[in-house]
Image 1 (spheres, rainbow, N blue to C red):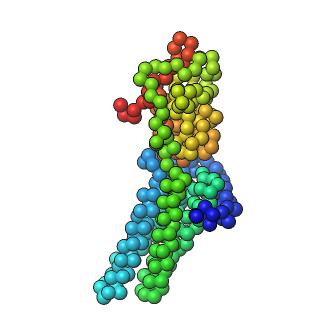
Image 2: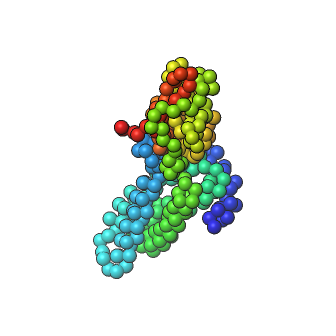
Image 3: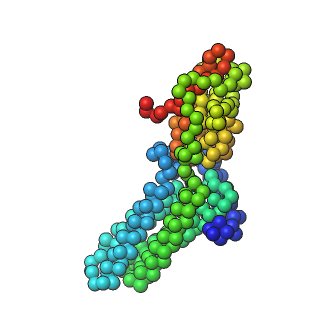
Length: 289
């Protein structure tokens, strides 16, 4: 249902995504670090849902205080003003993180995410109006703006859940795929089939790997990017990292750790070696083991 409703927004959603992408490119290295912060790379999963909980919770608390005031509980205006102020600040940070995630979407996912964002921005504007109405002690404006904002934010949150559970937005693409385990070193390619310093696709049973060979040293990760499912073997190397060709996520070849987002989850990594004219892998590696 949401996909059909959101399709007329395709042009606007695509334009917003391009503007955000261009902004990050213009910012260069600082922009990349800001993107990592707002994607949530540093905490190992998306930042946006954590912030939305604060916004919805703050708005709910403000509505509760509003209703209590209707039932005769007094001296709540100061508390409501502080809650609204903090909620507005968090909502602005939430919008920034949401736009950062949004720039790497496409198709129906991007359209629905665009609708989600527009509704939540409208809700945030309502919160701002409610905050200033609380400061001015304007009861009617406060009540109307807060209730409208709450309805919009609740709708936006519902659509956000649809994005996660229907499209897997910012969800680890390797979470449920498992992948073949090799309890001992298993040959996946001839040494000559893996050119030096060139990401190469190899198969361990039905599991696709990206293999990199540097002389007698080899590295292997699961080929499916954890962010959006692209093939890492079509990406490129930057130092000790492999960069996804789709959205630029970077992973350390030695252990799959995320070096730059939008990915937030490490790649499945395997031990690898060059032996007897072939590349062999074992694993996957259990992080921290």
